[in-house]
Length: 239
Image (cartoon, rainbow, N blue to C red):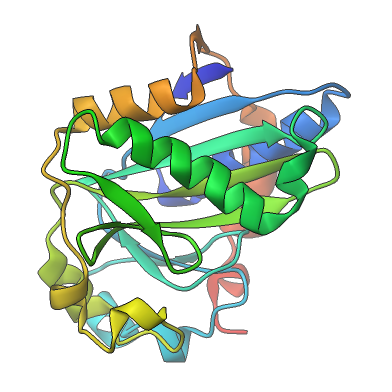
C-alpha cells in the first residue's frame, strides 16, 4: 500500500482529496490502495452527506468563531476537526478484499487494525457503536465510509490534543447516538488519546503496512471536485 502524507491549503481541498483518491483508484482498472494522513490547519465542522445542519450544528456559534461548516461525501453525523485531530483516509480494493463489501466487515477490518497498533503506544482502545474507537468508555475516533464498484474509502478522526470544549460549543447533542453514550454531553463522552501525533502516524502506517511513499496526488480531480461540489455553498448547505 502507498502512503500519502499531505495536508492541502483549504478544508474544501482536503475533503475533495479523499474523494479524488477513491475516484483515481476506480479509474485505474486494477486494485489500487493508499493511506493518506493529514491534519487540518484550522478548526472546521464536517457534516455527513445527508446531515441536516439545523439538527447537528450550532451554526450561529460557528459563525461567531469564523469556523466553516462543510459537507463530506460519506455518511454519518457531524464531527469537529482541527489542529490536535489527526485525520486518515484509506482506499481499499474490493477486488483484493471482497469481504469488505459488507460494511460491518469494513468497520471491523479497519478499526480492528488501528486499535491493535495504537495499543503499542497507549492504553488499549476498542470498537464501540457502529464505527467508533473508544478509550475506556470515551470516544477518541469517529469514522465513515464511501463505497464504489471496486474500491472504498474509509476515513476518520483521531483526537490526541483537541480542545473538547470547542466541540461542546459548536455541536449540539447529536440526533443519533450509540447506546453506550447514554446521553452524555460531549465533554463527558469525548477524550484525547495520550499519544503523540508521531506515534499515531506510526500506528496507522503499521496498521495498513503502508510502505510505498507517494508524492504525486490527483490535482486535476481535486480541482474539479472543488469546482463542482466542495467549493459551492449549495453543497455544504442544509438538505
